[in-house]
Length: 121
Image (tube, rainbow, N blue to C red):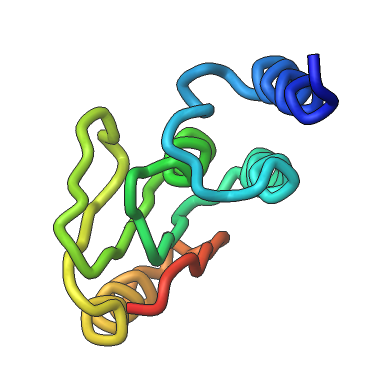
């Protein structure tokens, strides 16, 4: 087997060992980025998280699992099933994010503990 194939097989084994199959879908991040993201949200256990750039929901899965509430923003309507604690907000985040921040800031009981900016829209 060529070395490149063995290296690829090793990556599959590592990903399988590190991530529950549910968390191993639709990622568009490098393995090291995924590990770091999962570690940070697991340690932070955010009350409210914000994600800018939903796409297929790869990074949304661990963020939603660790957070009480998530607001995810994408230029397109990216509503995905199975996320009961996630609010999907479509549109340009420069316009849609500020009212959500104002709403959260108006609440004295809630706070944003984690933000992932993975988009420019």
